[in-house]
Image 1: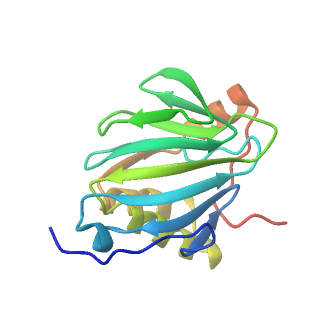
Image 2: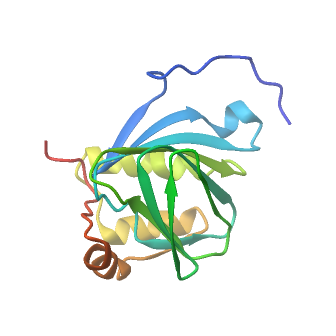
Length: 171
């Protein structure tokens, strides 16, 4: 493990990205943690679906709810996390998550080991340029050892009253 420099990440620090109703604030990357983990914050607009159903082959994810109410489908089970709850999404398990409330929500997403944060970085850059589409999203996920089920989006949107957009929000 590489030696890292001590630093403080303030509430406005870190590169920001946007994917529809989901934001990504890059707080700690694999290069800074010696590869052990990455940390991103996901601010979510009300009723925003974060992603299609997907599963990771390389990393586990831990979502700590900072604010709001977050719904998740984990291996076929629907769960809800409130402020202070931790939602564990183990590698190999199909999952997704969304803002299950009428107000904004925020989670801290711990990715272990690090690496998948680079997927988010590339996705936000593609979205900002208007170059993100389902085929490109699936191919990119595959490069990072993840599988996406794009066909799950209409079911999730209808079942939970959500919105889903892959590009930047039109505000």
